[in-house]
Image (cartoon, rainbow, N blue to C red):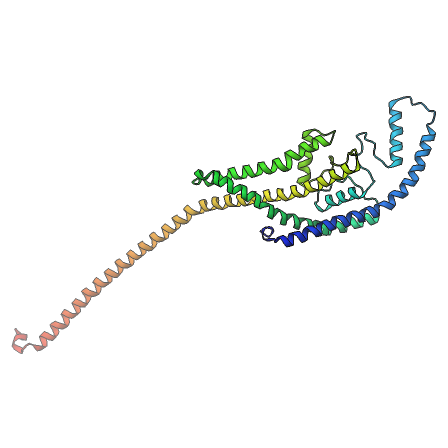
Length: 337
């Protein structure tokens, strides 16, 4: 494959281009969306003050009135209040913009960030058009290099199961099972447990669902990690960096696993085709050989018959000629006799 023949120099160059594409794109998105957000916040802050003054000294008669008032303030501030209705926020700091760029170029596309400006929408289309091919090329190259780990695992399995060398299908099945289990454990089950611990409202099933939806690049956006505020800004940044590393390595190893499965399936398909066509080919060959032998026998027989006929004919001809010559040479008396 192309990915396996990629040199480390080219791979490093692709990674540098990819990182620069992310960093520059995040900054541009932040700048494009920042002005729109500042204008909205100036107006909304005035609206919040009016809302607060309008309820000073007022008592709420029901819980519903309290929740409605909170939602009004939430809409005025443009900040999400966790009522289970809406998980989106229009605020976009640099780290959030960087994570947003990652979801674009990897085609995950959670949809947790809204682009509100016309310039931002146009740039988003341009950014995805060039960023996605860059990312896919880099992931394929890294996946080809990381597939060496799977091949090392495959070699170890073959050594341990050398006594089954007469049963290659069994060795191949065990190899696929072990490689797939190890990769699922490292990139699915273990990360799901970590997300379950860090995201307070997620169960393990929710986290496992989120992991699969993310690495398969489906990205529904109903669950998005890093949206819950960490105790400190440093922890928040570290969490997002960890997410970045997990998504990139997970996609690469997932690609290498798929590559292994495709190779094994092709091998099985080739063997099945060989077993199906081999008997038919042998029988055809035997039939052709039989026909050739039978034809040769018939030719030999005809040739033999022709030789006998010619021999008999030639004998008859010679005898007749000899008789004529003998008669010519005999004296007249003998002829009359």
